[in-house]
Length: 208
Image (cartoon, rainbow, N blue to C red; front, side, top):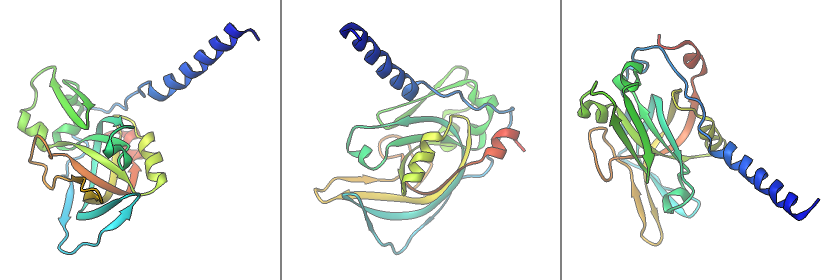
């Protein structure tokens, strides 16, 4: 094989891998209607026991579980937070799980934030913030991380674990929000994910 053919083959091979890795997956669509009527559920912990994960200490602040529609997902490979949390999920419930609402919104993520842009004003901004959140996912086990990679935008998922604060020996900290009513810096949830499931039967049959 000539040198230029080898170089061309390598470029195509690397390009194919990158295309497979970063090409957006097709979104899961649903019929109109609220798919997840209930709010996320959390219970503050009075007494906690920290545990070590990699080079960090995890302090559970509250038990946490929810069902939600995946509005967007974003992987991160750089930054201190990526040591723990390789992915953020933007999740919605109540009106933010309704196709009638979401088709008029453009949702994106960057810099560990999520952004909602209106194509048409169908829901007050306060209602958007009360019924959606950008959540930093810390997988408790490798299989949870693998499942996070498989999650598709539009799917209904169920997860449980803890809202946590994280600290390192050099003083670095990362704290979870404990309310869905805040906005701005520090308003994202830092979630230690112990259980995660993609509700396949729900995703296939649409709203009930």
